Image (cartoon, rainbow, N blue to C red):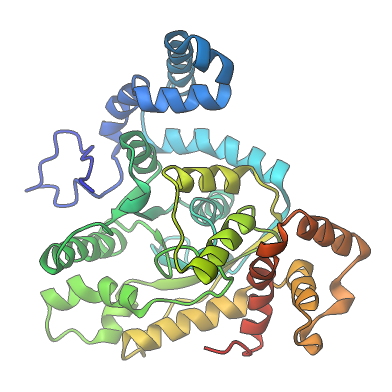
Length: 393
């Protein structure tokens, strides 16, 4: 995939991360102007909001959508302004699709320090969105968000993500040398953000969402994070390179995953056919489903910074896993799934399950096609087994 380079008049000599970093305040006005005339974005908006008009009078529908975009972003001149517009939608989403949102651990982190938050990954856009919302409620600055270039197949999606402080993780570079250069650039950018810009970052503990409910950190990500520092200073002790990044594990727990059926379908297809064919706009649909679907209760737990006493990427990954799994909250949905599978009855906390919990769970399970149910149930049951150390690895 060729990258759509949206950096405006980028001077790569003075701005080595111009093609991957989030947009800066001085770029916002031009990007918003471009978006208000982007035919692909306007077509997508009209099909979503004005489907009949989009079919019978597309030019009028596009003109109305363009006008709506310009009205929505009027007065937005900075990244902060843009995120404050998003905050109102986030508040409404939480109010209408979640029963409760609880945050813990953030009060133990220094308000004036930048951190590299590494979290378990269940939802493409919601995981970092909930982290940002927690920071916003605490009066702290929002994070820069790592996002894979596999999600950025449309220029307008790239623009919107980079306006919202996303930076690009290369996953489509071809060849070992190109991949190494891309990860070197990414590693240097992340380190610069934490140590020089003093700007926090959020990234997932692995590539892709944990579709089976098993959260596990990829040690290759830890290697990438220390790459730039250790290349600059060959004598740098690994643990010191880690401590410098102020890496904090973050655990997010959803009572219900709005994309659980889609994940079950993917797991079913891989198990029965050996592969899963993703449709063209599936990632975008997953983002929309995640935002609009019911989630029940959501808990976000911030852990403690990983210290300098780590000797290898595997040790760091194990510590992240320990904190993520330890901080993961088990809801009645998790216990009920384990019960439905007929496994490990001694792990089921029956006293925490109300009649309403059971009715809601059974109604949701009944809506899942029969063939997908084992995979759907595993998603919810696996965290119980993982926490108890019962997963067969």
